[in-house]
Image (cartoon, helix red, strand yellow):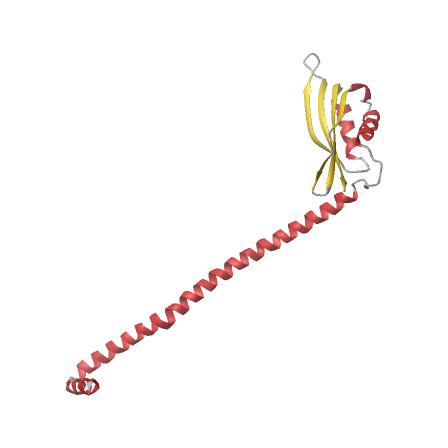
Length: 183
């Protein structure tokens, strides 16, 4: 019944009014189609594009992390090759005495104190605190060169150098030398 009433009204409209209503109906239908279909698709495409950019950035970061991880693994493997074997009788204290003797510093040693070994992440750290009194800079550098050229990985963790007040050429030095053994 309602359709008949609308058809009757349509027939009574002038051609210009029919054209205006047809165009208006087409505009409304176009707006409804845009809001119902096209706008959600555009929004979804925009969201997917943002996600794609984010994933590409994450992928590049992951690639950088993988390269960094591989470099650190290679460095760790290189370091582990220089570690003394667990069954070896390597003594950091004895090595330090030999190093001081070869650098002609044995008579300048005021104190050489081994520290309690600590185990961290599968490695046992052995440390020795070395105190030198009245040493000259070339002698101290010679000791550092001997430590650098050690057959095993020996590191200077801490070094403190103070000039003597009465003779600034002579230095007081405190060093903490460490080495690691895989357990």
